[in-house]
Length: 109
Image (tube, rainbow, N blue to C red; front, side):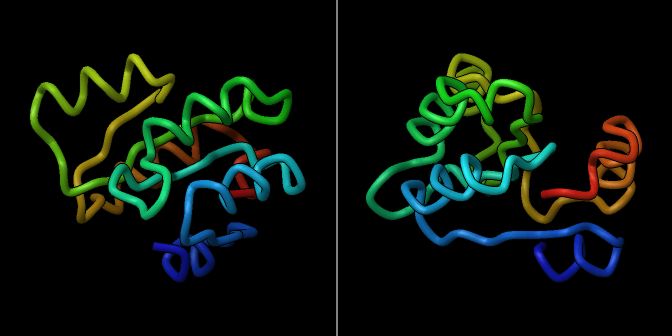
């Protein structure tokens, strides 16, 4: 995903745990944050709640990107503060729509 977004012209940062992702959001202040739900140590739901409580995370679009796509999963992502829920593998056309909807500022992911 990071390589695809890079090819699409985005400035991308990658984290492999929720805690590192939260730190990156504070430092990098991205316009869009893609979070997996099944991460080690801290799941995506917990990370999303913490990101939403941080000043840098209040304006970001939070997108769940997961193999979990049941209605209960989608309900939980909404409750955690996610804006969208995409099931892996993400459709490139949907990614383009998300980037376009965020405008020029979407280049930081």
